[in-house]
Amino acid sequence: MPASTPGDAHGFRRRGVLFVLSSPSGAGKSTIARLLLADEPELDMSVSVTTRPPRENEVEGRDYHFVDLEEFRRMVADDEFLEWAHVFGHRYGTPRGQVEAMIAAGKDVLFDIDWQGAQQLFQIAGGDVVRVFIFPPSMTELRARLERRGTDAQDVIDARMERAANEVSHWDGYDYVLVNDDVERCFAGVKTILAAERLKRSRQTGLIGFIRRLTR
Image 1 (cartoon, rainbow, N blue to C red):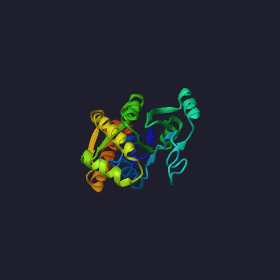
Image 2 (image 1 turned 45 degrees about the vertical axis):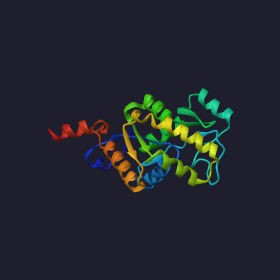
Image 3 (image 1 turned 90 degrees about the vertical axis):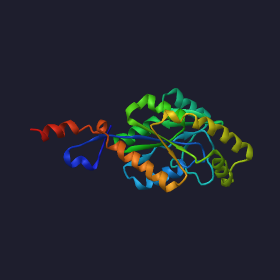
Image 4 (image 1 turned 180 degrees about the horizontal axis):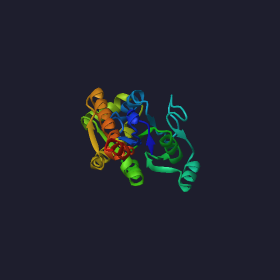
């Protein structure tokens, strides 16, 4: 899956990165994702398909692709998802065709998915996947953030906290972990990880040709 890099002046090409951000709801991964997309022109967001109704200010095709349950089931049956999961009574999935088109266009792809989706994606794409888990500074602070949102009833917040404990228990299935106690510092860490992964020798598909020219 080639993508352009500044090193192309030397004949380098590289494989694209499938860059996964996961965290419990309220830990800040959506904020980090928005900052990353604004700062990284070679990175595009994978827009998930969901059976959840759109929230206020959510836009079809930008935030999610909204479908009914029957259409989602059809997409599962037709193998149109790279990964999918059932979360809080709704289904979410990553459309295969969309991701393949972005990779073909030379883009890295950003995923905002949970540990189940990250695991499924890794099983399919292996070494092209980079998995980053973002912790909240504490579970007490996580609950406070959810309550400050003012969008969920207390029983929904309780369910999110219960799910958060389960999600945190899967931290060891990730390549990197960060604590989001300061959004700018966490963002800087994520950018460092992405930059390093883009430069990995295993992704430099044009390296052998360069070495042959260098040693003639």
